[in-house]
Length: 478
Ligand code: PFF
Image: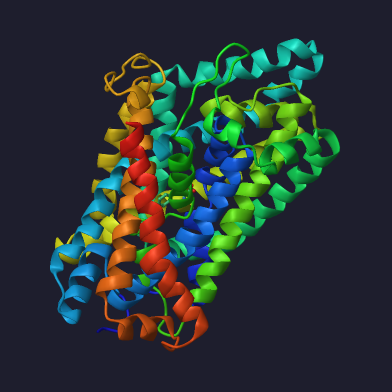
């Protein structure tokens, strides 16, 4: 097999760690995790999510990196090459194809949501939210909600921010891996974490920290399965385990080749177990920090944790509005959130761009423009789902999906079905099909080492069983 990738290589294993963390940490941690934890009742959701991260996420991330490092090409071609060399069915390259489809769908909405964060930078910088200090407390929530809904109900504004974000993503992709990506991420990731810690300090002092903490970590299965209780009615909802597992895949960028393609740019001797563990820990830390920042603010302001996609855009502006120097911190925070989303967006299309360069002989620029253009257009579906198509429900006959907008459906199927299925195929391929010799060689472990055996056990049994059960549960609840 060739030793280096034609697309370039990270300058060291830190290059990979930074880029993979950049891919993993994004809107999934700061926007999606808190609102999902809020929607599914906190505690049990968080614990189930953490279990999925540790037992499914880590081994599957190792497997993806290993495949990339072995193949040194885009996921589709790496899988082809590996199956050919190992003389097993080339049908397994479906993993790469599934990733292409999933990538377009995820990027299409990811860019729209990142656009919301972009739109909040000027709002915070101009001190829009400082005026909440003059409002009576019971009008504060209404004020922040109105600002948010004014934004998402205007398709033209959403389109403008979406286009800006997608354009920026295409530019970095066009510059290539190390030049564009590695350098900027080295400063950005530490800055984001620093700001998260500052905000945590704020929440500890000014928020109802203990209420937030209990909400996140008290295991309450009733809230998990009956998240939408009103004083008069309680409805069972079997979607929560699926959502928690889907979130574990989404947040770690697993199941669609994003981490695999970054593995292809790894230098030869890199310890996959160690570097992936660092990425998983950093990603989990970012999500937990976001939760510990947001929920104390939710409770100290008498807000409802179950606010859906607007949660972060309602709560943080309240905190920034009340905080000394909040306009600067706030603008900086949303800027860093956009940058984190940016580094994730890049990793979503890199597998497809790399394939177009290899197989269709396109230049990096045209491949980036083509992929960005397609995802940009698919993004219209998401934009319209928050306004003109708000009432469009495509699957009214399926109770679980009956009230989902087109955006909700894209989000639901990509995170909860396509990524886990991709992960399942990766686990089966590396666990059962790929010769053990290749696996241990790429991991730089020997076959009788305890950590190797543990990895293999997780990959062969726990991951397929876990994903299989949760997906079967989906079939049951549909
Ligand atoms: N992990 C990213 C986040 O949490 O925001 C989203 C993501 C990136 C999903 C790359 C999938 C992917 F391939």
